[in-house]
Length: 55
Ligand SMILES: NC(=O)c1ccc[n+]([C@@H]2O[C@H](COP(=O)([O-])OP(=O)(O)OC[C@H]3O[C@@H](n4cnc5c(N)ncnc54)[C@H](OP(=O)(O)O)[C@@H]3O)[C@@H](O)[C@H]2O)c1
Image 1 (cartoon, rainbow, N blue to C red):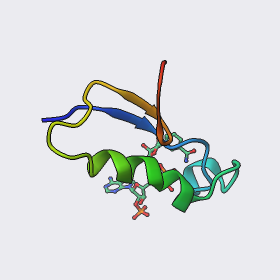
Image 2 (cartoon, helix red, strand yellow):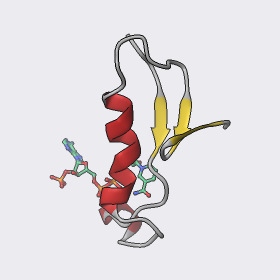
Image 3 (tube, helix red, strand yellow):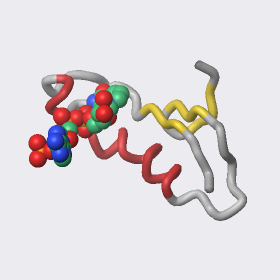
Image 4 (cartoon, rainbow, N blue to C red):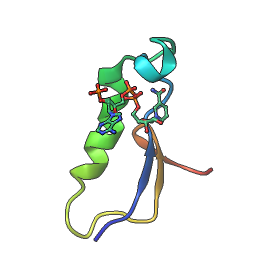
C-alpha cells in the first residue's frame, strides 16, 4: 500500500468560486498521477501538483 498526499494547486472550481491560476483539469494531473503510481512506487510523500515537496 502506498500512502501519499497531493495538493492540486489553486484551481478554478466551485470551492474557490472559479478563482485561481489553474484549471480543474490542470489540478487533476497530480491526484491522477498519485493514484496511478505503480506497485513499489514512492510512499509517505507530499506532492505539490506533480512534484515531491516539503510542507
Ligand atoms: N480547488 C482548489 O484550489 C483546491 C486546493 C487544495 C485542495 N483542494 C481540495 O480538493 C478537494 C476537491 O475540491 P474541488 O476544488 O474540486 O471542489 P468542488 O469543485 O467544490 O468539488 C467538490 C466535489 O465534492 C463533491 N461532494 C461534496 N459533498 C459531497 C458528498 N457529501 N458526497 C459526495 N460528493 C460530495 C461535489 O459533488 P457535486 O458536484 O455533486 O456537488 C464535488 O464534485 C477538496 O477536498 C478541496 O479541499 C482544492
